[in-house]
Length: 208
View 1 (cartoon, rainbow, N blue to C red):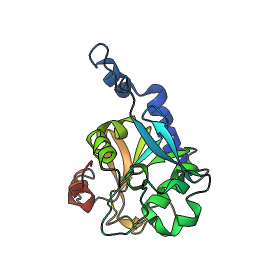
View 2: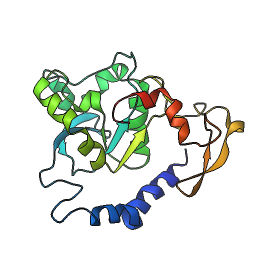
View 3: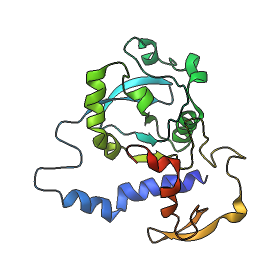
């Protein structure tokens, strides 16, 4: 992955992407993408490897991925140790590779916080869990960017290109126009790279 390119994409969106600014400008008077009352959420601090309290106005990346049948570490009401600095380190073997790759990716592009459902929603607090699921759109729209693990079959799939050897079949990659930009893609559907998403397991999950 060309990490410098990804950082430029984010900078372009934040500093000069007219479409994003226009969406905000076209909202009705008094209504903003960031609601007047931001949602309280948890985030993973990828520097200190622990959970921290934040809101949807904080700066963070979100992860969208396929859980599958992978057993993984989940935040619970009793897991207060996860809020201590380095609290996740003793539990790293319980965190699947998609999530660990997302943490590493965030760090490599100088982003400190990541939202991922298994760790950032208290899974055994039914009232809070329902409240956050009902406002999932705010969580994703509040993110600076969303990492989409579109090729993953489950939560143990790697993010292709982050590590050597995880992006295979480069001879099948071709340039395609995506959102009016030439992108190097390996589409499952040769007709259109975005249409390929409909053929993935990822497309069958919620919040896609």
